[in-house]
Amino acid sequence: MTLRVSGSHLVDEEGTPVRLRGVGLGGWLNMENFVTGYPANESSMRAAVREVLGDHRYTLFFERLLTSFFTEADADFLRDLGINCVRIPVNYRHLESDDRPMEIIEDGFRHLDRVIRILGERGIYSVIDLHALPGAQNQHWHSDNPTHVAFFWQHRHFQDRVINLWEAIADRYKDNRWVAGYNPVNEPGDPTGRVIGPFYDRLVKAVRAVDPDHVLFLDGNTYSTDFSIFREVYENTVFVCHDYALAGLAHGGPYPGYTRGEWCDRNTLEQTFLKRTQFQRETGTPIWVGEFGPVYTGDPAVDEQRYQVLRDQLEIYDAYNAGWSLWTYKDVGLQGLVYARGPYMERFGPFIEKKARLGADRWGSTMEEMADVLAPLYRLIESEFPSWDPYPWGQRYQVDDLLRHILFAQALLPEYAELFRGLDDDELIALADSFAFANCVRREPLIELLAENLRR
Image (cartoon, rainbow, N blue to C red; front, side):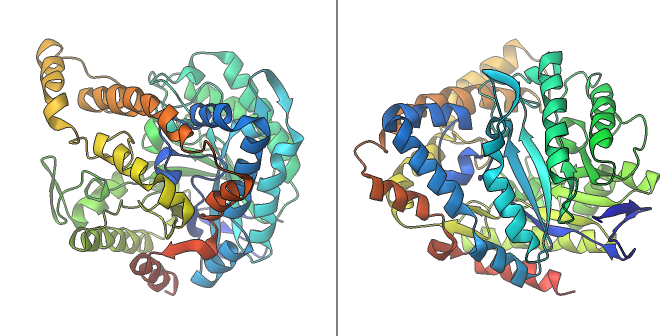
């Protein structure tokens, strides 16, 4: 028997409350630009690299990367740290192809099965998170969206494919006690707010028909911050909020202090958390923060403030008995508990620095890079279209998304792919193995901060 919801708690088969506290395995089965260093979105990056390497050597590199990125050594580390849960983001493209919709790719489950197994062997639960859906469920790179339009909400066909996919996933893991549950839609961004509610009704009914026992972890609309779209409290369901602190973002100011004119201190963090979890507290359902976590800069003084943001958030979650999943476990240096070094960073480090100079990654950009070049355009948009307030985050964010995170990022794709040219098989394997646990650097202050909290 797996976990289940009992009032405001998750409980195990003996009825003992379980508070899931863990990490997200970002950048693995759903690759993200800031996590592994590429530009733009995953499918565009893969196509560019395939063009350079050819099919066989493309497969060699990415299979090795997926294998090296998370192994028994990583699972041992998380177990010893005290982690009891890993949220596993998945791109639908591993399990279904756009040119053969509704057909499940059996082979695509290999790596997911492997990691769920090695985590379960160490007493660590998995939450399966569909992070990128057909048509893209939100407006950004992490749903593998090459545009700024979430077509998922506009086409019933995409929605039908996700229902079919989740029926297959639920059927596969319905008897696995170490799967804590299913997180079917990461950070939905339905601009109208009218499609997501009926879609969730369909999804819940379909999954429950296949697997009536596993917990559903359902994100609110607008990137898991808006729960007004739920028309009922589904049985055995956790409503998941995401809780990134403004002061912890790349453009965050001092802490305590002002970020873009907004004051942020511990009280602000708590009030934001209370606002984002109002639905859960009113309905008496468990509180789980599916994503949160600061961005680190490499400046010791700034990073110490970011650690304090995180320390304060964890104390707030403790006070309200909230579970959590820190974003993210492993990357190239922005947020991870451990981060890659070695051949990959030696070869791609200068390219990653160029991306940073251009502000080409949304996550990690201060939105001030290239300010002298872009400022006239910001002023033009503001003066000519003062009432334009696009979903989800407004005018300035939209302009940056279109310019930096789509136009600049896509222009960088050939340059990234060319860095693979001329490498032999051993060199490709060495690049991939740069992400193996033994070759990574530990972010010791973050690890110790988490260990201290998990010991409580």
